[in-house]
Length: 183
Image (cartoon, rainbow, N blue to C red; front, side, top):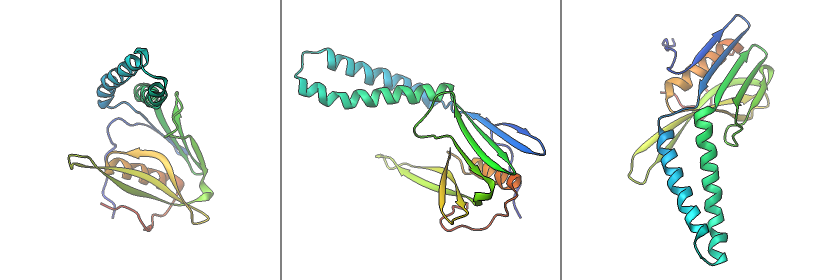
């Protein structure tokens, strides 16, 4: 018997008999820390390039400039992007807009290609020893291949909510999958 899950905070849900649309903004409070870090990082790189340093140092610094540009792009995504998950009985569609992100690709998967949906937990250990987890949704495709969906969750209950809603609207009978995380 599945326990009842409340709708996680920050989700906007539109339900009808034919489809379900779940959307959420990417914004997290850590975005402000990243803003200050990016100002420091990119300010340092600007000073590095304006200083009278050998060309070899500037070539080496160009990698760091690329990191700084990528960081600014990610921060912009955190402030303006929204993920929209549209679930019908025929397909699963995931869109990240308005800014494209190489880490979050748009995708559409036909319902007939999906046999199961499951959650995978990843662990990250910081230098100080603290452990954090993320939960990613995966699907088992009809050819028995696994594909990671471009939906990452910091909380298990949020990932479980997505999984159950997808199964409900696509009429997928949940079954255990090798490698699936179950709390």
